[in-house]
Length: 329
Image (cartoon, rainbow, N blue to C red; front, side, top):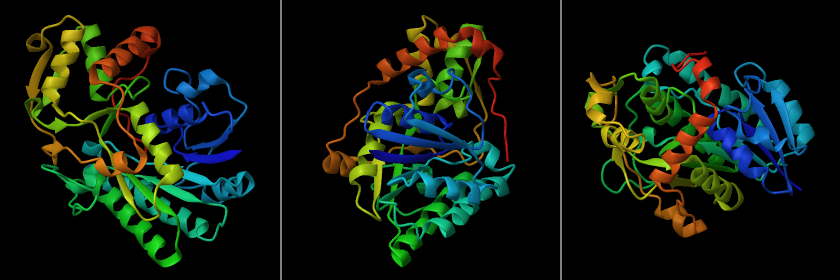
């Protein structure tokens, strides 16, 4: 039986990864999250009601001894760390919270994990934001140049893990994926937020006029890549996961408007740019494609259609939820 511990299992990316893992009848999963399980609106794996999934309510900022005890009992071959505060704009207001969650709590966990011999790989879910603005052919060898406290905290975590691999042989592999999206995503993110505002007759604000270029990749494509990296990634290596195409935020919102039969001019308004917003996140994923025969399979139109279907299916529940980011230290 393959045993995988997913830290941050209630996150959008973590919950989809759990959902993918549970499709394999020979995989047992331990999910760890600081928040209680949030229900079927946000956690796709709940629909499986699998007895091979176990949940631990624990906060990596405060409960590392509790987490280590559970890990020692579960004995996972793989640990995948999705834990992160990731809302870029808020990281300027509370930089200490981002470093505490994204870097310091990880350091505390690593101090306890480095001598555990049951771990085959520790997969760190990083971010291409550690590079700053990405233009041209950005490979895994790109110099780190973070532009925000969030990105700096993630870069610090990556460098810390690198030292543990060099010094102790700790089996780290690192994943940096571009902008993930899909059904079950947090409602304040650009794709679900745009759909919700269009359905509600509200205006969509485009920071900087929506000129920033992003590479949107469906969460299930990323989860498949993460599973391949978890199983076969080379210790100490970094792997990019990215799509073939990139879009400006304005073009993306325009595509959503078209799919919902609305005029982008009437549905949007340009506002000032966010502090530290990088102009582009476009990275090269040929290394993962060559090593694992991994390729994105879900087109942007298929993916957006899936989000629209999810919003329609859960519309009463979505209306009752907050659509704004709520910061939690």
